[in-house]
Amino acid sequence: MTTGTSHEAMAEEIRALAREHDAVILAHNYQRPEVQDVADFTGDSLGLSRQAAATGASVIVFAGVHFMAETAKILAPDKRVLLPEPRAGCPMADMVTGEALAAWKADNPGVPVVTYVNSSAEVKAHSDVCVTSANAVAVVRALGADRILFAPDRNLGSWVARSLPDIDVVLWDGWCPTHDEVTAEQVEAARAAHPRARVMVHPECRPEVVDRADAVLSTSQMIAFAASDSATEFIVVTESGLVHSLRKAAPGKAFFELTPRMLCPNMKLTTLVKVRDALLRDQFAVDVPVDVAARARAAVERMVAIG
Ligand code: CIZ
Ligand code: SF4
Image (cartoon, rainbow, N blue to C red; front, side, top):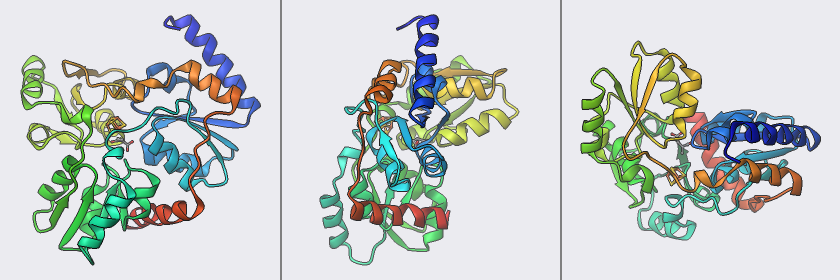
């Protein structure tokens, strides 16, 4: 399963199965290149969940991690949502539970709870509003509160706090292991090696890394920025899978990764074989209890309405 030819044969089988089962295949920007290439749509978690809600297909195969498939189910409750690899979770999403968030909220009456979409349905259901890395600053600004609780990513939360100095942002202590381990020295070394490159940094990185960016962007924003900016070289400080999407979106430009490369082991668990098996065996369905889904959907919809 490593050669181009075997990928092509498997991709053909997957496309035929998707037609047969009335399925749409969605792949996150951090997925393996061959999984991105077999998908109908690639994108960030919210963009893909909106595709899930808009599609006419009855089955959604979500190549990503568990919270993303849950978000798709929340926005498309009547569709069957399959996660090809049931072990694909997100350690950051697991750093807060619905129960713990509810207790934090009870300790801070009247303070809005703002939750990153990288969280479980249960956690979203206890939140006032969700945000993505693309809209966190704009949504929090629009809330008009002078104090907020932000979970689970302390790094995205500190980016919001530093962008909006008049708002008191109280941080939950969660982080993404893949983004949090990047150091300022690594970014400086990459810049020294590629002095003409623009540095694009994801806000899940630490503040001292974010401070060394030319642009602080979500994955979908990085794709748009690289395609439209006048620069022809870019240093990409986010999960390595995005480089494949960037090269497709801006084929004439050069994209450099940090050393060591940034990898999310959970994102890499999904393979073409698992996507094929998901379709073949109708596995692994992701369900969200109706009441939890309704409350989580309200937090997501509030974000969409504000942003
Ligand atoms: O929301 C997403 O898809 C994630 C995890 C990253 C991003 O910036 O798009
Ligand atoms: Fe979670 Fe980080 Fe992996 Fe995204 S890259 S799924 S935030 S662990």
